[in-house]
Length: 112
Image (cartoon, rainbow, N blue to C red):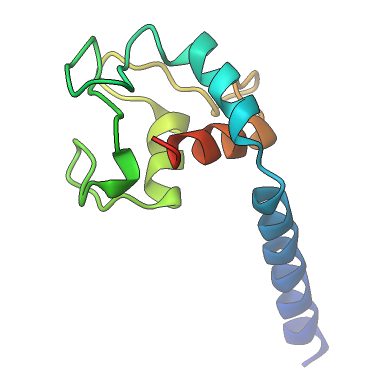
């Protein structure tokens, strides 16, 4: 019983920690990060495709290009793992984006 209560407490603590990090996300910082890492391959002002799909209005779309519903989790997973020509940005021993930077990028993407 103590183990179950402990596990629930740890899970709740992790959930609250993640929620707190996301609420502190900075869209303007995310825009700067996006400009350095994503803008060479993705448009945000037009629907035109560069190397990757346009991200204009991303969170207004029903689905990502891979067919998944547009949610924070699926967008985060796409950025983290990359794709056909897209590098992975948050996996491996030396991730390109920290969790805080990822939250900032997601906050920016929501403004498009």
